[in-house]
Length: 140
Length: 286
Image 1 (cartoon, rainbow over the protein chains, first blue to last red):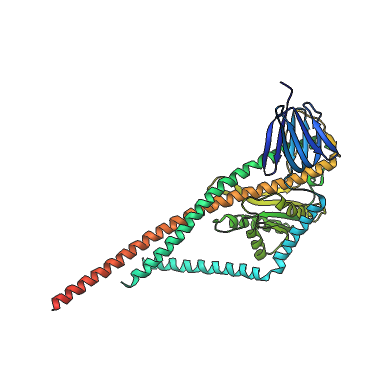
Image 2 (spheres, chains in turn yellow, blue):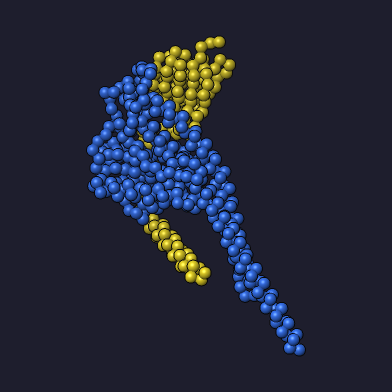
């Protein structure tokens, strides 16, 4: 049997693939990489693209939208992103999250009143329940 | 027979409520299993990442990233994770209670506190409680995705990098088992306990494009994955807490129905007895 290397492809939301391979191809930021067993240790970012795993019998394809590739002589780990990442995209997401917070806190006064009313209602219900209980105790 | 009818309607209405609560219990039980699977699925990613970071850290002890550097604390940030919906017992309020105690302690040490909320309940809480909310994310659904969190986490990390906050904590409910949830507050940044593991094999990597950039990307993702893990774990807690709360509600409704049934029977008996005695008295009078 040909020499093999262990491949793990994991994302934050779950393991995607784990198994032996004769060759792994990955889209690194500096160019396509082909990793054979006993490759020298390497860490690189991945571009969105296709990670191919050749296990001698078939070629398996895994789409990654970026991530990090770690190579050790007998283990290849792909830490795949599930989301498309880019500096400006992340920035946009951050701004959006900030805006949501501001909006929720300042803008929608009605909702705030609603939350307050709800809290007051809960308090009133609790008081009523307490009174009812007291009555029960008095009766018996 | 005055009270009997009212009691009957009351029993019917409680039975309806009981149906709803028992349905919610079953739904929560089914969702809980899925949430637990999801929680377990996140583990390999974080473990692998911790490994790589450990290696990098050992290979470059001289380069310490901002996320690893301790500094004097004058302002801290909390990422507070709660559920989106209620009816899950004391889950959220237990967490908030613990958090408030922690915040008071910080304030006594004259440390300022900022927040970032995930989940509608924590947002609602900080609206009432006051405090500066930097970012928020709500309505993540039963299967949260990491891209829903990227923005929120980035706001906090940016604030950390700019020196606006000196420490970031994450507060969430840790899953112990179905019956117990453990409100947890953990330090997220600076990353604690880095060099504890002894590495048997030690080597240096080839970095593409260069070590700094790789480490940057890794650490950001690592922190995001930790927050994501906390969100997923909190989700599992929410479902199990709801299941337990709804089970208790169903049992209570059952007890209430039993009690009311007894009262109803008594009222019915009394009415019948009264009718008979009226008839007998009437017959005797004739």
